[in-house]
Length: 105
Image (cartoon, rainbow, N blue to C red; front, side, top):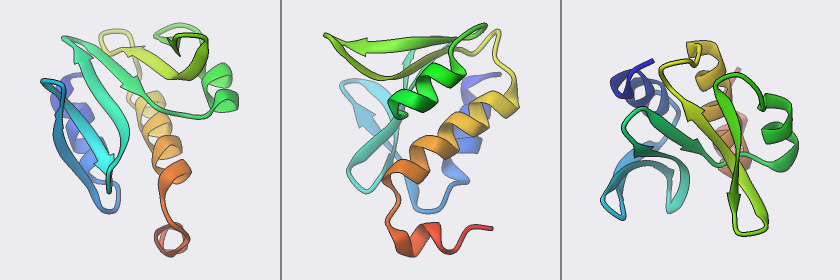
């Protein structure tokens, strides 16, 4: 996976935009950050604890903010597109208002 692949997946989600987040590209739904291209080849995705723990392994590591599990960190060189797409969708679903979730199949 490349950063351009991630960008295409993220921006295909309803109402997701790209914005700067402390000098890094982030993908947002409104003001909520769903994911950040943290470093070259590294994507942080803000998913819930159960989704993070279920995805952990291989290219996906748990992402901690202090003592709080805040999502996952994905090594894009090792990640499969389906995994990244699922994680981005989980982050989107977590933050999307009901009116948007109802429009998705």
